[in-house]
Image (cartoon, rainbow over all chains, first blue to last red; front, side):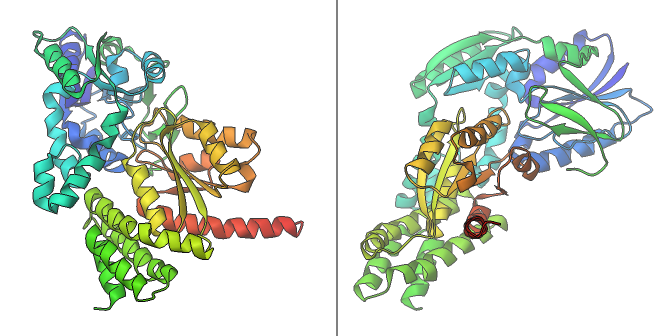
Length: 247
Length: 223
């Protein structure tokens, strides 16, 4: 098969690795990670444009290197080619090898902040947009410069309060790291915040199956032209539905 | 500029010190506490919300307007309580179990407070029992549920089911919101309304309370 993969840059190492080992001919287009910060509808619009651009003469299917990602895939339409997406809530589930393991870990470890090589090395790309819209990740000094001493200090406290609810930093190691520098960075990050640190072994099974064309319906949704992806928030995460118009 | 206009501007521009000072001066000059809310707080927060929707304001500006409004409310609220004035309604607000994100929820709570509601902020990662308690023991008439992750959205459904099981569902209105939440999901899980953003929560809550009165009337008339 010839596959057009549209993927988030946060999975750059994992997708590239799976592409190299896939029996199929693969073209990958990576999109910037900040996309999901625009909100579900705007992210879907951008993804739809990329899906629609895939040439049906050149490819057999469009494969999404994305999870549901805050509803970014909700309403995404298969235009001229079948469209494949993994059944997962976000990239952490993809890196952990499945939504069951992720959900179990998520529910039994409240207050966990997840990270990976992609988040560590590409995390900054999301910041400019988040800065403007939410003020998150902005330094105290720049808030003071913009809003004055009193309001700037207040905003910094308000915008960083949520961090008090986190107490556990989890770094997912996939085995594709060149050296230990990500692990060291993750550990340092946890120590700096005074959080407990754990390293979890990633599982690239889902990403491998995605690029190998092994689309078991249990883990993947294949949407035919004329259908769209809809989020259902049940065990299957996403379903196919007929219809041209976005919901 | 009249005192009321000055107060309106101080809230809208997030100037908490001026807002508190102007409120103190107005109250001393004999202003009716309720009129400060309806004449300055509500329109200022409405305008802040409108600017947010038009992308002239972002989260920091909304937070600052809410802060200025609260600085004024601290002075006004005790007078309202003393005079026995009733709030527009009591609303419980919280982020559902498993979800720690609270910035959106805090904004909703502030907007509602600025809109004249009595707000019970339950915080983040709130188990269903806390929402039930807010209705049963604290008299919340409207419950607002927030979630920022698709993985925690099902907790909205289980919270609504728990409110049903506790026998209090029919007495209240339930609103849901948060970045990934959709109107369709709100309908599916049996919520009464869905807010696209913090600003819409105020108008929606007003509507819910009107509906609630109408429901109660129908019920008492046996229809």
